[in-house]
Image (tube, rainbow, N blue to C red; front, side, top):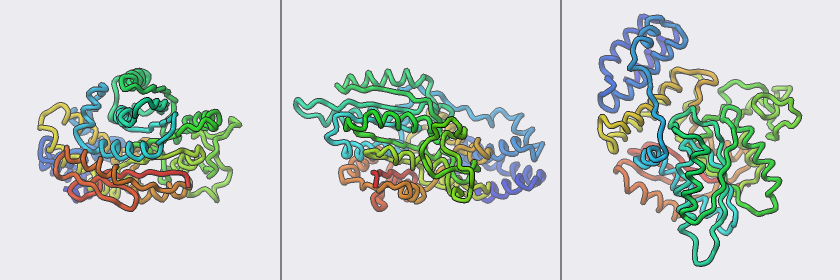
Length: 422
C-alpha cells in the first residue's frame, strides 16, 4: 500500500491525471475507512493525496472527487477539559512525556520557594494538574509549598487537540485545582504564536526576567510537542541574524526577531534556532523537551510520505488496544491523526505546520544553543515504567544516553530530554 501511495504521489506531482486516478481507484477499493489498522492508515493518506490534488489543481477530476465526497472531510472534535483529560489518559503518547518531565522538573526545582513554569504544550496544560499533585505530595510538616506561576502562549487553538473553552477559563480551573491541593497558582496568558517563534512570549519573559532576576525563582520551560510547529530551515524565511535579541527599534520583521541585511552568515538560521538561543538567554533552571521521534520536514513529497507512513502506522496500530470500534473517542482520535496526515501531505509553505524532527536533530539544536543535557534519574525511569504497566504490552521504554524514549513494538515513538544552561 505504501508503494501504491508513492506511485500516486509521483503521478500527482507530474500531473499524470490518468495514472493518479487509476491508482486512487485501486486504493479506494482495498483501503476502506473502516478496515484494519493498515487499511485505515492508507485511507487517511488517500484522502490527503486527493486533498493535495484538489489544492494544487493538477488533476481536475481528482479535485471534483474531493469536492463531491463528504466523507473526505475531517471533523476534528473540540474537547471539554474533562474529555481531553480522559482522552489523554487512554494512551502513553502524552502521559510518557508528562511523567518523565515532571520527575526532571521536581528534581531541578527542589528548594525553590517560587517556581515559574512556561508551558508550551500541545495538550493545553493537561500536564499541570499532575505536576501540582506531585509538588503537593512532596510537602512535609509545616514547610510552606512553593508559589507556582504558570505562563502559557495563547495561540495554539488551530492545531488538534482543540479545547472548547478559552485559556482564561482554563486558567481559572487550574487555579481552583491547585487551591484544592493547598498550592497557590498564578496563571498568565501571553498572546504568542509558533508562526513567529513565540517572539512575543520571549520578549515578555525577558522583561519579566529582569524584574525577578534577584528573587531567586526557578524558571521552568516545558516544551511538550509544540516546538516542531516553529518554522525550521526547510521553510524559506528572510535572512535572519543569529543574534537572538528581539529588536526594540520597531523596525524588525514580522517574525519578531532581528532580520539581517546580508544572508552570507545566516543560511543555517531559522526561527527554531533563534527561539532556542533566545530561550538560553533567559538562563532557565531547566528546559524539558518532549516530542515525536520522526522526520516530517523534507520538501520532497515522496520522502515526506514515506517517513509519515512509516511513523503514523503506530497510532492506528495502538488504537485497537484501548478504544473499541465505533466509539466516539476513537473517531476523535483518528480524526486528529488524519488532520496531521493531511497537513503533512496536502499542504506546503507556512500552511504545512507539522514539521516534526527526530531526537538526534533536536539534541544537536539544544547543544548549539549552549544547553547541556541532564540525565533522567532512576526514580524517573521507575515512574515511567509504572505508568506503562497501566497500558498494553506493546509499549516500552528505552534509554538513549541521558534521554528516555517511548517505544511501540520496538519502534521509537516519543522522546523526552532535559536540559540546563551549559
